Length: 171
Image (cartoon, rainbow, N blue to C red; front, side, top):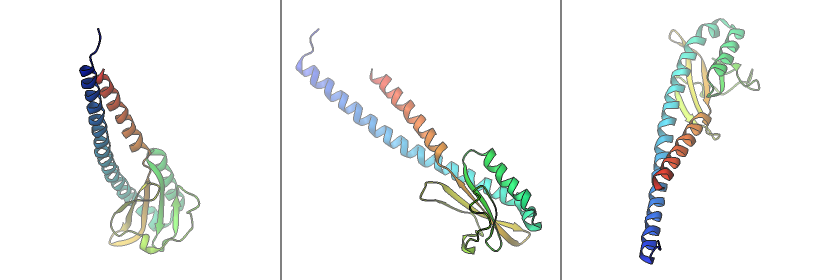
């Protein structure tokens, strides 16, 4: 069967419209998914940071540095999203860290959070800082950096599925 010129034009127009609509859908879906997944990661990171800050308050108060180091190390082992975690005492000195280059360095006390602070750094990592308190006294701060890798992997997987379904519908 021979395809007429009008049929070719209609088929070409249909294909272009389908591709443009698919690209718009893909772009919009990606942005919405990325925003929601990053929000969920931020909420989870804040909860983890607050729980760890609570867990390290007693060892920090009595100076059990080995236990603090173990807690921080176990955190990174148990949560694959953790890029870095470090604990500062009241003076701003790093007493425990997953990154050994930070240990014993003194950071500005303005970096110590009285309340939870969240932001994304230049590497795309989500950094959360929470105060470590004992009673009414702030005795330090806990800092946690979450890597964006798992969120990006999930977004890429979803985009692949959307592309495959769209291609299947087009055929």
